[in-house]
Amino acid sequence: MLYPKINHRRDVYNLNGVWEYAFVEEDYLPTAMNPNGKPMAVPASYNEILTDMNMKEYSGKVLYEREFAVPKREDCLYRLRIGATSHKCEVYLNSEKIGEGINGFYPIDLPLEGLKEQNRLSIVIDNRLTAQTFPNGRIKNGKQLIQHDFYNYTGIHRDVLVYTLPKQHIDDVVIRTVVDGDYGKVSVEVRGEYKDIRYRVLNERGEEVVCSKENVFQIPDPVRWEVLNSYLYTLIVETDTDQYEEKFGIRKVEIKGTQFLVNDKPVYFKGFGMHEDFFVLGKGNNPAVTLRNFECMKWINANSFRTSHYPYSEEVLDLADRYGFLVIDEAPAAGLVLWEECFGENGANEETLAIHKELMKRLYERDKNHPCVVMVSVSNEPQTTEKNSEKYFEEVFAYTRKFWEVPVTLVEPSLGYAHNSCVAKFSDVICVNRYLGWYTNHGDLTVIEEKLTKDLTDFYEKYKKPVILSEFGADTIEGLHTLPAEGFSEDFQTFYIAENCKVLDKLDFCIGEHVWNFADFKTQQTTGRVRGNRKGVFTKERQPKMAAYYLKERWKNK
Ligand code: GCB
Image (cartoon, rainbow, N blue to C red; front, side, top):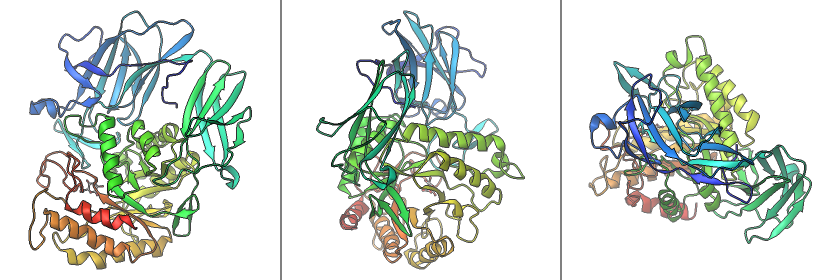
């Protein structure tokens, strides 16, 4: 799947802006422009824009609609690209259903046939989470119950584009670097219709370094894509009728013993679990917010993040490629804890499993060419202690590995231990979440050292795989200080993080630390949340809390 790009063969028209929205009935069909439509921004979530609680918390179907016109050309095909709508949706062009979206974090790419001079695009979104959606949820007494700790933002969250393709066009481009162990050897696989094809490669200065008719070629004096020191080449595929440009980086990822190697050098993951979440926008993609996030990460000397708990926008990954961040690309499989409903009594529920596998494949189709993606996570905190999880995840891992060449992991929950996790054996790197001294023995920093050492060492001893502490953190209200340090103060957060890090420094099979979370984020209302989850090392405004200075110093030389 290729991102729509503009060049002399292809056009892109942006449909972002102010659309009409309306909450609609279950069986609603958009036969004409809805007369009750009110203005709504795209991309954005409606939840942070509306001021009425019932509307903000609405669960059900919501219509997004707009009219549009594009220049008409007979010599090309038209397609629609919706970056993401949360969650499922049905898409209609001039009252005709043209397709569906199956998940809130993946693009929907559909042919647009029979375009008129003036057209109406209607998207009916369903934001309800069930046992068979990703993430999972449950509707009880008409109320949406959510199984995970992030807000169920709803809306069109990423760009809506109409684009053209030549009739005979390139469908897909897969770029593989470092084939046969030689740096600079590149192989390109192009799917599509063409008679002639050539491959050109430009370096970062825009100079042509390769021009080849063959799909396997050597880049002279290759410059590698390194962690925090990226180098991106541009591949231009030219056929007799079409052209597509894709950036790529030359980098090799490997696990040797307990080392995670990027370009033959061991790396230590320093960074965060994050969320796509900001004031007013909700989950609406915004490059200014992404850039502020990345500038903060550079400032604090982080080198990596996990796209917890769903695939982030393609624009985020483009920028991560450029900043040289290492990304653990996570599927939207959060909250897989409803074992009876999701998985049945005797093993995997076929429907859940089939969707999960499809999402792993689509993740590959979308993100395969990004050098920043160095590992894929199939799920965050499923109930790995449940016996049925073994069969289920054996299949998910095997299927994921059919596509992905990078290591594959799964993030173990706080109650998943080496002795009771049915699935840790499938991971290439064991990612473990721990909130010792926070959710257990709350406020007691003295419990961390012994318990964390034991939990992580047990995993290593049993599986002999490298381990990442993929979540640890403490809710912190900025400006709150206590002496001695008590929970929710900036002091406590700083000492809490330092105490965990002290353990990691002693365990050489540990290859990384991802603090939970990069910034404060919205959750559903509940007693343990003061306007959301406050474990951010940065506030929601993206200003540093006290712990940020500790981490900046620690990560400078780590
Ligand atoms: C976790 C989850 C994360 C939560 C976090 C917390 O284990 O993976 O989604 O937000 O704990 O703060 O409770």
